[in-house]
Length: 467
Image (cartoon, rainbow, N blue to C red; front, side, top):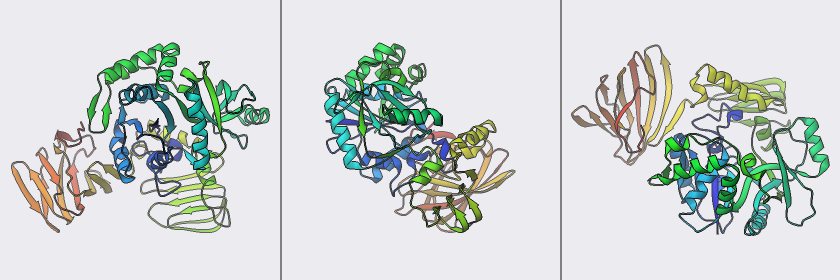
């Protein structure tokens, strides 16, 4: 048996504004009807067990819901208190999975990559699994099709072994001159970020080459707490762990590292240009999504989330329009959109974290309008769900039911509201909104006060163990 370990900790900043920190690209349906995470899980080999997912605390309910949507059970959703790159994440997964099965083979994959050619992928994994049983550590290398500067590379010894070649080094994203040199040599592969090895072999090599990482992960995993599918680590121990990728922590140092080639289509969807290259196009080589009207437009990607976007007489551009942000970029340099995100971080802009519509484990809210002293939200609570029992220090709330039946707790009172009925929640009053019905509950919430930030929530009880 083989245990998939799906790493779902990326932020996807190069695909802003569709990808946000609180809802990054792995949770978006960018290529198919499924999200990238769902497609990653569904392409696992038939002999694989239920996967282990590694993600951060903010994404735990998104991961659980997306697995539920495809009827996928799991062997645990490991919550990282802080992102520490791939070597610690895999170590925690390896230590956790050994409680389920004695020394399983791990198939480590990122949650946000595109792979076409499922049969070829399975064939490469079958070869990798056989070699991993010989205590080798296998990296799946993609045979490069062009001198790509957006991917990392794996240098091999160029040996003529039938199934694999030995790893010499890992290379960061090169300039075009180096990329051409790599392609011409024939000894380089694109680094897919997919690895296959025994759990025990990985941990042994990690302890040898990075004992500080191994020790921190061991201590963090000794006092884990399980809450349903969620596995919480010892935060104090884990934050002490050095941040390092598996490439440089282990794979480049070990004598057991080898590359098994994959000859299908692989893409890390690392920019709008790479996404454009993998989508169907019109006769002018454009990708258009949503309510879009084009005239004399060529080689461009235009996306509209909710309104008409009309574009005239341009070429080779990226135009992404969402509810709260508009991006316009050249297609060629779309890799550098991360610099926009860094600038927004410096300004503490909320648009880097969330969309206007924010998912919650109980449903969602959509910030319709706001100005000094007020904010209007549309709130939807799923059947059988409820928000936390809470209060606010700085704001009052007016609730109007537009669909469904709401069970309201306000102070010592508990009562129902139906369509077109309303109530007022004074500042400082303990309150809760609950949907005991069978259809989604929708309300309009008008907040008033001196401060309307999301951190003005004091939770007294919560079904989802949020702070």
